[in-house]
Amino acid sequence: MQYKCKLTVVDKKVFPDLQEKYLEDPQSGACPFYEVGAEYIFERYGDDDTFWRVGKGSQCSEAWDCISRYIYAALQGGSIMRGWTNDEHMMIACCNDGTRPVIFKIERLDYKVVYVESDAEKIADVLKNIDGVTDAVYRADKNFIEVFMDRNNEVPDEQIISVEGKVIRID
Image 1 (cartoon, rainbow, N blue to C red):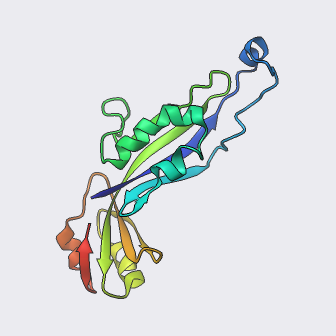
Image 2 (image 1 turned 90 degrees about the vertical axis):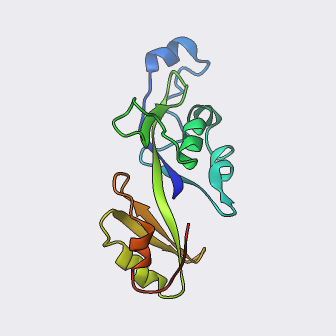
């Protein structure tokens, strides 16, 4: 099983009374860095490691300081927040800006990498119909299929191998 992490900006807050009382610029307003609905995908497979490339340096440093440990845990296949949220593969977190915090949803995405001999797009379409598969995406840039799993219903490798076409390898 492989893991990605999806970071979604779900909300932004502003506390004008605190900005007025404590900030150099009392009209700072909402965080200018993030927009509600923005999504970022982090992955670590093969030579790809977007934890640093998509993370530190392209994210607000205050936010990155608060969320990076959860993203890293997700990329390692760990529980992001066991016993705290209703789904241990997900959590809600925010940056530490007390006058204009940004609220994030952090999700662990479970998937398998499937290398096939031919007809990858066709095989991806067939894989989407297997119970427990939430999506199957052919990555032409990498020449493999990403098969995303329902967190509560992992698909056995044997079921993927039985799909028409020649499966070379499953990671």
